[in-house]
Image 1 (cartoon, helix red, strand yellow):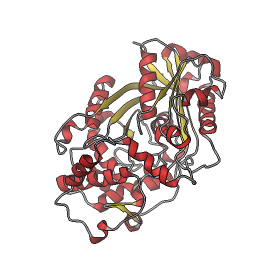
Image 2 (cartoon, one colour):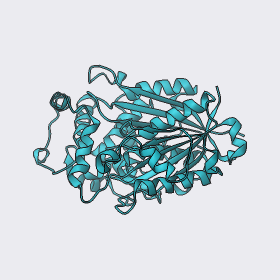
Image 3 (cartoon, helix red, strand yellow):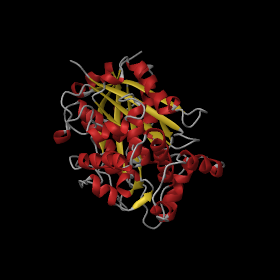
Length: 415
């Protein structure tokens, strides 16, 4: 099977852009990725397009990729639409990786583009999140989630109504309380993760938020769903990311000297398990499969981007990726291991909580950061000597865990 590389990456700044359309965001990211790879549009043989909101928010169903990419000038190539919640564009990369590895195409394009901010549709913006869990089983799922943190004492303000919010903030709050119950994790440790990521984002000119916050400032921010404050939660974001994926034999036609190898891509769904049995968490299963594909282990990884829709999730995901023992993720963050300059920097981009979280584009944007790092082009946030990197990108929710997760492992191309 062919070795697979990412030869070009591009992304837009992330933020709230009511005047930009999905088509415009797509054009910006794709143009940047093609230019980065030294690639002309007619050289692209297939494309995967990811978006999760345009159908509900604009009524643009079924052919979103064709609308966005053909309007740019892509014609006659196969365009596949991918919707897999927050891991949509990582799933697109998984499919492009498989196609190139099998020799079906030599050059593929993966795009994620999302508009989440519609100032005239604020209630619908938040209602859209409910499609990311089983709408036919909401009552049972809610009961399960509330039971996860039973026995964890909560302050009186935890019962107050904090207003409109994504249902996923309540989900992550329940998972955080479960981690508190099982491992003694504290709200302050969770805030340490957020403070680290907000600092990282000040070094990323494309991040939605670029303001440093202390642990105390994170804790003092408005409560969303206890133990999570606003500074611990990802914002609504607009933005796009694009990746040029290619075979080794195609590198000679591109700027191949800066290519980064895709060593593994593992896409999994969840399983029926005891909610407290985190050894079978789908994130851990995906990581184990990815390491087996890549032929390396967690001890070889130099940096990671993980799916921190709330910063508690980073704690869980570094455990699932094997960077510490189960229950050790909070202490790892508190020690500073995951900060730039630490043992294993995590979310050097600022993570979803600070860089931004445009759902269908999030996975591609994680890969953009890791490719930039492995090329040695990350500037002030560069992880020196980075050779191997991992991305964990989860999506949706089913039962007691995400509905789908992708773990991708990248390696610096050695001359």
